[in-house]
Length: 250
Ligand code: SF4
Image (cartoon, rainbow, N blue to C red; front, side, top):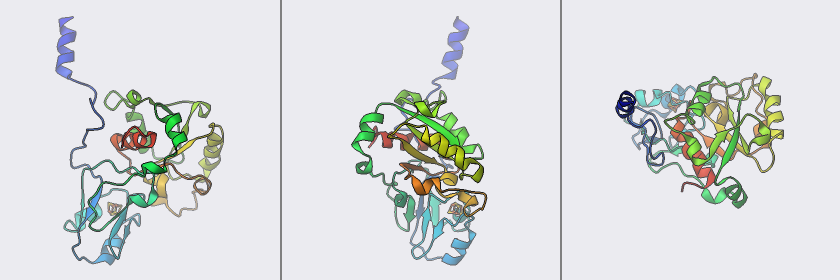
């Protein structure tokens, strides 16, 4: 008995007591900041493998950024990545970080309908579909439910059947082979239903953008309710975004 108590005391707390106040320590790459310093913009744009960097003025689209860090490595005076992990948004335009911007990524709370808030504000069941994913986002979604992050404390859970789900979490760039399966799963979810895009591959196709092996027509038909950038996103980014969508966090 005393041995067990000793072990419990030695291990300390296995969970993060308050996820809303938790920080991810550097060198985690979260929201970037772009200085006004003049650089060779063409060289900056060219080095990005996913076409996430825009010019005149310089911007980074977090929906396309794979967070490889190459731009900050080559142009450290121009671009730096902060450890701000709260980068999920329901507004696609908010994911584009412009030169000189230092404010957090905006979330449009007014755009979330009353119906969504009243139905899903206290508990949310989600079905996950890996549509050509590489298992990285899927790992992080799994981690959201482990003892550390324990998103179940907010009533958020993953369910096996789409019939029991309130929405779908899509990972991967949506390959042709998975397009029909994704549609079948979504059709089985009762309305109103949410679409959450988890990871840069799901949001924009990532490095696979433009590949003939993809079929992203699903996203032409249904508007995403939440975009969670990252490659893969950190569990705290995922939980923070979902809580905002549920209206549990402002
Ligand atoms: S960190 Fe993002 S913006 Fe910078 S080079 Fe890599 S993919 Fe492009």
